[in-house]
Length: 489
Image 1: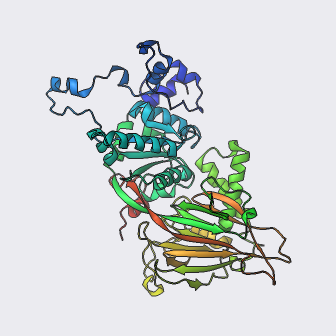
Image 2 (image 1 turned 180 degrees about the vertical axis):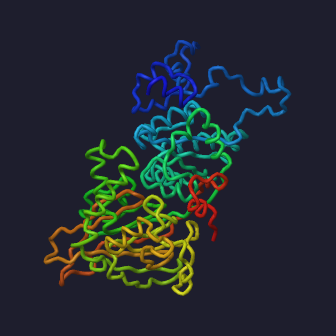
Image 3 (image 1 turned 90 degrees about the horizontal axis):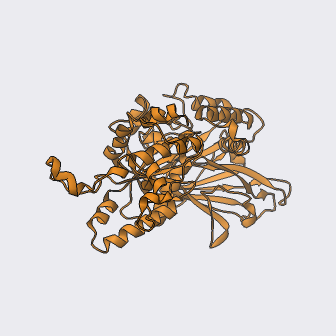
């Protein structure tokens, strides 16, 4: 980053050390103040900390000593809204590293963590252990921070759900609410909560950073459902590769499990996502911006067989649902025209597309459906048909009446998969994705002599709720986003 760029963003010139570090390289975020034989000025680690921390730190006098000099009665030095930030410095091209630097200056180096260097599970476990240790010693500040802590995540859907999953796994109580600064391609959770569909550099310019941070302070808390996915295969050899968000079950080698907040899908849409993911991994320079990424998605969508040559999904998949947690499984036919199934939690898909048809809900009651919401304990099952139907839905052509095929609305869903083949030794694959993380999944070959155990089964059940922050007062987006943010159930 040049001096001119640094001055424009931060309002002052950066140090030569920062300029020479390179625009794409995020600075190390784990440096902390450290004394060296009582002489901090000679300590290189402390000097690095001073360069990376917020403006006031080298000059700061604790509030309790100086507040009365201006007639202030508040002598508490504790922040009104304690905030930590997780930043994926590799997301959004150069934006991730730039955001990391700006937030370090704005809220302090020790409160900003690059997830490529500091895993959220390690950070949050250590922070919570520290707060609980001090709270047990009747430290009122520790109790206050636990009750009021907010978390900002700057990254794509994968980074956001990584932090949300960590909070759920650790069982943090009270659950700290999470806000989003979107750096990904889809950003559907961010859109639904009013934080925008893409990052804008103006948010972190010197003249705007105060207002940007104030939005995270003023945002309302909102619960959001998450769903557990548990899949079983005939044996463990069926898992060639799975995304980092998907875990092997240590108690069952033939099973994998994960949580998702946006959607799970199987079929051609996941294949297009997989092709794009492979391109991005092998040729990062070809996927450097959100616009370029969406263009590649369009290319792969057209080349995966939507328009010709692909058999409908009902040849491979069967579907069962539970309306409520206590009800029995009910078989639901997969429509013969459907080539991709999507289990949808949020109200949009694929970067803000309305595939449910939120503006066309007049006849829902006749179909035993209700207007969806992301914390109603229900998940919507929809299907994409052929290429023309999918193109018009994703292009939002006549969105008031055209939408994906509504198949079911339920509390749990079971998808059973197998592929017709001449003999069981043949390897067959289908494509899956979860919150934008795609993978190529081997499924059993089905012959006339196959047993019922030779199948791949995905069970999706309600996993719980996450506490998030919704930007109702200053929702970022047009009328459609305003409608999403103020939607109730």
